[in-house]
Image 1 (cartoon, protein in one colour):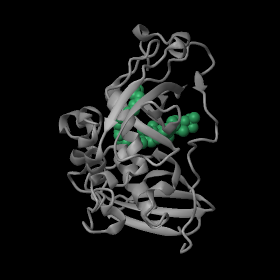
Image 2 (tube, rainbow, N blue to C red):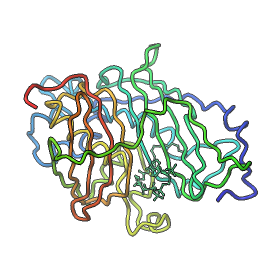
Image 3 (spheres, rainbow, N blue to C red):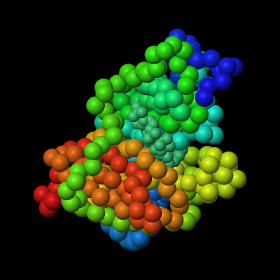
Length: 309
Ligand SMILES: CCCCCCCCCCCCC/C=C/C(=O)SCCNC(=O)CCNC(=O)[C@H](O)C(C)(C)COP(=O)(O)OP(=O)(O)OC[C@H]1O[C@@H](n2cnc3c(N)ncnc32)[C@H](O)[C@@H]1OP(=O)(O)O
């Protein structure tokens, strides 16, 4: 719970302007990210995946996975944020949800400006739910390239509401990023992939160096028996699989992605992703095979559907 030295001040918090950040990346970052989310891990010459790490005409032609856009925010936010009027313990932070809109195909290299804002804060008693929105623009362009909304679950930071009315602030449409209902029917497609025991160590090279994912002592302090996989790595596995199974390997087919992290994944576990096609929406659920537990669920909206499905 919030302590007396951390009195919540909603006026201060809601008036606070988060600074713009910059992010520059190149083809090497794109390829390292793709390897970090398991591209080519089962088959190094899989033509649906090799294009994310290699192109015969040169690296500038590598294709960029839509979830690469999640990295644009990590550099500036992963160490946490100083928010006036609201206190939390960053070591107890868990990634709760990610919502992504892709407006244009991501280039293989770019310099970007990120406009960051507070999108939500809710007092859930035992925890606080904080949402940060990032709109990314190629430097010099007025048109956004993509938008990411990150929801973090701040364990122990709830119970801060000043009045008898529980504090709840959200500045985006209520139908965006909701938890999905998993259909009771058989999935249209199912895919299985094992993560490597070193998966988090490889994924962190893309910029999220939080020791929760690499240091056994830090993981224990945060309440886990060993380092856990980055939520965005699990999301990357699931969306790459959906692109392969539903979008005929075309990463530009993805328009919107929503994912809720249901429980933690440990590196080395096997991910089974079940997919249901509902028009141009793919509902998906990812389970850890070894524990038969759902770890991630959400939806992907696509621009078109391959005729073979
Ligand atoms: C703050 C500064 C930073 C800001 C932005 C930073 C962005 C930086 C980039 C990314 C983040 C970096 C850090 C990364 C960390 C990780 O990757 S951690 C690994 C991935 N995440 C996980 O493994 C979490 C998996 N999920 C869980 O363990 C559980 O779902 C939970 C989050 C612990 C919640 O479970 P529980 O305590 O049992 O909650 P409930 O009692 O069921 O629900 C309480 C209310 O909270 C709502 N809720 C539940 N789960 C989520 C969720 N995943 N996301 C959002 N909201 C959630 C739930 O609906 C309940 O609300 P009400 O229904 O209104 O009561």
